[in-house]
Length: 320
Image 1 (cartoon, one colour):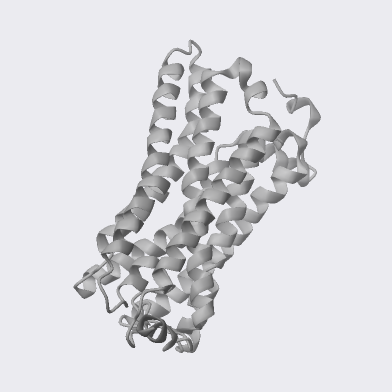
Image 2 (cartoon, helix red, strand yellow):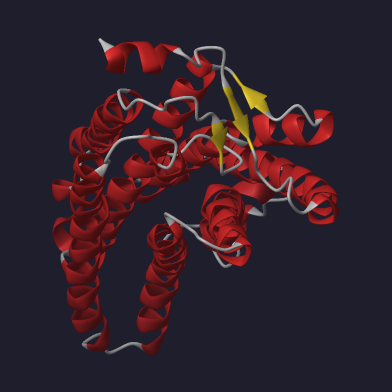
């Protein structure tokens, strides 16, 4: 009963401390984050639109890329508008229900991206290591099933962690040392031992992050072996370009996300700042860069853009 009562004490909401301890940095970040958020919306929306608009992009690779772009749109929108509003108004508050929803959605989307990136690595593995059977293996139904598994796994993990996190009593603590509601920051508010939650969280990290990373490594080891056996230098270059984009996104996302756990319970102001900047990186910068990384050297997307703009020349666009 005591646990239930203490949980109810702050149903009115929480205070998101964010970058309030660095007011000059905060105003600079407001401008930068606004620009990056707009670029994120435009870039990922363009990927989704082009993958639907151009029939030549109706392939497993672009199906998963469209899923990733939609995920990134939701991922940034779950935190950035609230953060910008708090910086501008200086209220820095979020309702109790809003905090639950934000944590559930953000964690669910982040977990989904971990699994989806491993699915995309599997798609590249089949395309390069089993090219003759690619269309048979990666049929539309399997692609939809793999995408569904990624989304269901991500939000199932989020549901468990969200429930366990908000069942903890806080005993009057309501200042969240972050710019959004996330599990590590919410655990710091608890007035009881959180070792069970921390064990569960690290177990979830193993399932949601470490296992997909292992699958990605397995896929790319086999991809590398297959690529070095390709006789044509043009073929090797094309394979490396296709896989290099995905590998760079994996390194950025997993690197920043896993590094963030090193600052789960920061002691000093510098450690707090590093933890918040890391959270900002994987919550905003990576989703903004994903469309650029995937499309910068992608001829298929460039062709789709030219077609949309009416500049396509038919003689140059016959597919091999």
